[in-house]
Length: 517
Image 1 (cartoon, one colour):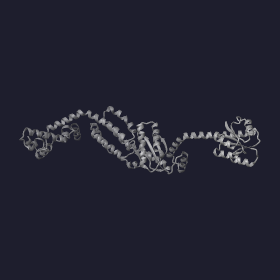
Image 2 (cartoon, helix red, strand yellow; image 1 turned 45 degrees about the horizontal axis):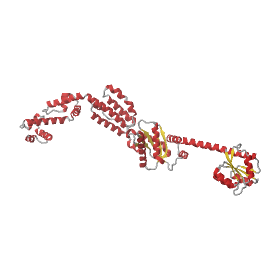
Image 3 (cartoon, one colour; image 1 turned 120 degrees about the vertical axis):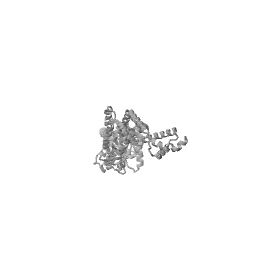
């Protein structure tokens, strides 16, 4: 029911209209009466009726003055004017104030009821319209965030958007942009994550970027943010790092960021491609880093016709269990791959066959299990993760091979040391000679095996053994001659060189050593 205020300075008319009109049938209720414009104005200010039925001629404030003051404050209140004068000027003034019904007294209850019903219909129509607008606004509030996100997706994928399109959408979404200079910031969450983590990262970024953020959305497994370029690059870098740090602190996950160069809003599609290209280089720059176009330019390389490394030699070292040598070679191989900055697929095409070649040198019973890791290797996103996995697997194979051959190695070293003792006085005694003529082995491999087992190079071992024998011989016969020692300990006819080696080993010459005895 709509509230009605009845205003007339004649008490009889006021009471008569109040009594004869069926207010409920008209869709209204009589909320009050007033004897003049001033009383009516006070009632309206306090009670706010929907409809006012008022006389024009009244003391203090007439009906037209009442209409003007009320309409100025609340234009939605409807008026029905009553007058005992059929003066056109009154009607014209009332209509100019927005009054649609002007009744000349005396008027019957049918005329008043008809005017009242028409006014109620106007209010009902206005109410329906207002309800529709409010409902539409509420729905718009719900869909506006999704519309903003969808618009950003379209902006970076649809090349037809121009400056005029952006201006229209800027007004629609309430996005202030004094200058067209913007950047795109793209995040990708690393490791195993749920889509809830992406929305959390987006919310953290929106909160920390504040007024710099224009739009944000998720595309696939990435979070995309359109930000205003204020020229404060150091400040922006700090915010990007803070977003990553905050996200990592709450969710124990890392995120890699790619930042485009600044550009006009109409270049958003180009900037998006730039950030995608930046993210590809996290294969070399590592997870959790911030990658820009400058990093890409610094990392640009050329693809070689053939990646150089000696696979046969590496496999031989893995087979023999020489982990220290293998580790150095693997380090060199992956450093070379990193410096070349090849496409991800090309880099993997070198790393994965390297892994296969190495695992073939291990226990054949484990080969099938180790080859299952090929799918895992193909999915790895960084060169560092490839390196760590392959290095760990190859180390395990080397250590297993070394343990397998440990007794064999010890036997070879024992035979080598026995040969040295036997030929201690042979001036031609050498690692190459023993390896070739006695043990029938590769000299380089034999030397590395000897050092691994004894911790000493073969040449140092022979020299040390000869000097210990010399000291023993001097202590047993202090009159032994230096040239005799040289001949008996493999220095031939070069006693001077023997003396030099002896002094280097003991700190004094053979003659001085005799005196100390």
